[in-house]
Image (cartoon, rainbow, N blue to C red):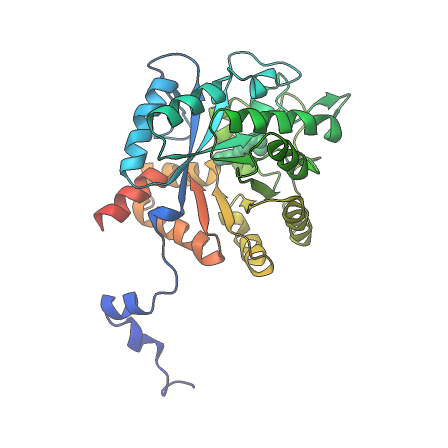
Length: 325
Ligand code: PBG
């Protein structure tokens, strides 16, 4: 069918038609809000490169979690910032560590809100890498046990789901086994499966105080040039027992989200990372972009590419807009 028999504009003539034929939607159900927790009381420390996002002490975190629940957001993703860092990431799997304490507090006060634990060691390592460092390299197999310990300690503290973001080979299987052996066979794993070595994580590393002190993460995170490799990474995680597979970052990697959606039938998550957030915030502050419109268009695009779930620092702002609509 060709013009003039077919006129695509016929169904764009008014909002009712547009609404009726809309292919993709964004719902609050799709959103996960990442949060940063620190030791102390009454702390609400702004992160310069992420306006509206704070490092929160547990009391403040719980207060904000109530607001998140009332906005209808189903889940938060928790990142812990410890007091002390070392070469074994002791704080990551300490039963009384920052993230474990925060999880206990949250599940005690607001059990309805799903709490997902980011399982990684970089925030807890003095060198800022995601695993045990030997010489100049991150030792994959020595790291696995610590990751499994971290995931298990989070499950014990009440985590509703664990999300390994380290990109070590074999970690999903190791974590699945540790959970199953300890009675947490019902705790799902959301794997950061195709996680790229991206410069878009810059602001996050300020928020989580997790920038590597030497080198970079290119020996474990993926090369931004690769998409076939993403399929291999996701395949491994699925075979090892992942329940949800994630692509990260989101906007510069919509093609990867799309391919992963086509090739796998598990739920797909996408992480709209700190740099993606910072860019929109910065342009809006200059008056160069309409912040709300660009935010909603970005989130919808991630859904259109095929993501079921979106981890985004915009979750509260988007949820409030969806509620008002
Ligand atoms: C930890 C981790 C990072 C992010 C999530 N988990 C940073 C990194 O890998 O360096 C980035 C999230 C963001 O930029 O919003 N490994």
